[in-house]
Length: 266
Image 1 (cartoon, rainbow, N blue to C red):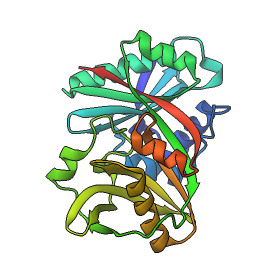
Image 2 (image 1 turned 180 degrees about the vertical axis):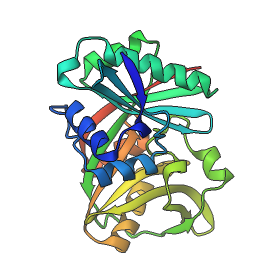
Image 3 (image 1 turned 135 degrees about the horizontal axis):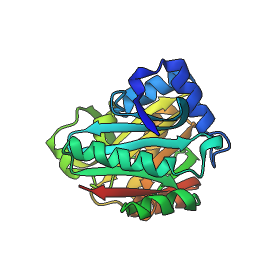
């Protein structure tokens, strides 16, 4: 087995490899070249450190590797069907750990969809441990109550970074967000929310309240409804055990799937 840097392959070949490796996955993972490029840019995926595994000059598997500060992450990993069961996934994980060690980061993270026991067992056997369970859910914005809340566009500063939970997914960390709004009640800052428009709906990357309550969640969603109307709203990678997520479920947000967030401490 040999490893190639992803930057050695043309984008069409990388896209074909990704789609082939994720065929028949538990949720749709097929992407276009444009989507792959956008994903790599948004999530700080390194073409240099991302890796393709080969066997006798044939592509066998792929691993995307992201890096920001003291945190690294596996941003997607899969093996082509014909090469499954030969230890390629384990070799790619070991390679990712070796890369993280050489880059002197403190932590390597990944996510695995709940129910993918084979992959989760692989990560456990290579000394990854669970941080938390993340949920993806979808609902529709509505007018829940009269809202005194204001959403004020802002730039990420030290307060946001200190308030951001350490358990936040690598996919939704503030470093990957460019549309952050502080949540205010009169002059009091209560938290922040990161979101973007996606198609005809909204995509919430982070929703953080210092002291969450059902009324505050309703007020923030009502303000979003005032701004964007009765559109679909997807929340991504939210801690499934958090109070805030339970309030969203009470408001009718339907869970689409869960993922285990796992870490390897270096």
